[in-house]
Amino acid sequence: MGGISLNYLVRRLLVFFLTLWVAATLIFIIPRLAPGDPISAMVARMTQTAGFVENSDAIIEGWKERFGLNDPVYIQYIRYLGNLVTFDLGVSLATFPSEVGTLVGRALPWTIGLVGISTAIFFVVGNLLGALLAWTKTPKLLKALIPMSMIFTSIPPLLAGLLLVYVFGFLLDVFPITGAYGRGMTPGFNLEFIGSVIYHGFLPAMSIVLVTFGYWALGMRGMMVTIEGEDYMVLAQAKGLKPFYVLYKYMIRNAILPQMTALAVSVGTLVGGSVLVEVIFAYNGMGTLIFTAIRNQDFAVIQGTSFILILTSAIAVLIIDLSYPLIDPRISLEGR
Image 1 (cartoon, rainbow, N blue to C red):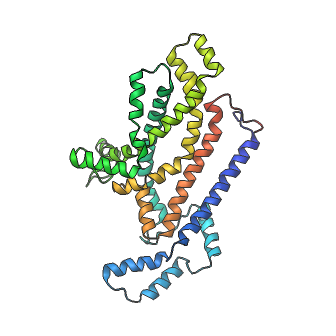
Image 2 (tube, rainbow, N blue to C red; image 1 turned 180 degrees about the horizontal axis):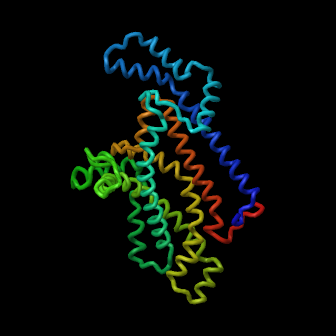
C-alpha cells in the first residue's frame, strides 16, 4: 500500500472517526447553551413583522413537538447522531420546510469556489515569495519589496473586505460589491455566467488572499532557512547544479511538507474565516448561510453546516497524512 502499514491506516481512521464524533457532540451542545429556543425566536420574528400572532403559545408548543424539542436531551442527541450517520441533516426551523441538505447543496459550491481559488492563490504565492525571501540568489530589490507586500497580513479579512469595497467598489467603481453573479442571470456552464462569477468573486477572494499569504510566506521562509545548511544542499551546490534546479528540487520540495500539513489543518478555519467576508459582499455561500442560521437560532442549519465544515477538514487532514510518502519519498510509515 505504498509504504503505509495496515496498523497506521487503521489508527488514522480511528482518529478520523473519533474527531468526527467529538466535533458532532460539541456542535450539538454549543447551540443549546444560548438562551431561548429557535421556535420561540421564529414566532418572535413573526410577531415583529405582523404585530400580533394569534395563539402563539400553542404554535410554539406544536412546533416544538413537531421537531422533537420537547424530548429529553439524550433522545435528541441519539436521534441527531443517527441522522448524521445517514447524512440526514434535518429540516430548517427558520425556513421550514426547506431541508438543510438542500440549503447546504446550494451554498457549498460557492464557498468551495471562493475559498478553493483563494487558497490556491495565497498558498502558491505565499510559499513562492517565502522561498524567494530565503534564497540567497534572490535580487536585493525583490527581497526588499516582498516584506512590503505583507502589510495587510496584520488586519482581519473583515477590514480588508471593507477597504476593497471602498476603493474598488465606490471610488473606482470597477468591481461589484454584492452578489455572486449578475442580477437576472440564470446559472449555467457558459462563458457569460462564468465570467460574471469571476468578476463578482474577485473582491471577496482578494480580501482573503491579501491578509493570508503573508503567514505562508513567513512559514516557508523559516523552513527554507533551516534547510539551506543541510548536507544534501552542500552536495547539490558542490555538484554545480543550476541554482533554480536546487531551489525547486532540493529546497522547496523539502520545505513544502510542513506547509501542506498546515494547509490541511487550516481548511476549516479558512471556510470559517470567510463567513464575514461573504456577509459583507452578500455572497451566496456557506458563510452567509451560517450567519443567518446563528442569527435565527436555527439549530438544524447550524449543526448541519458546522458538521460539513468539520468533515471537510478531517478528510483533508486524513488525505495529507496518507499522501506524505508521495510528497517526500524519505518518509516511510511502516511500523509507525
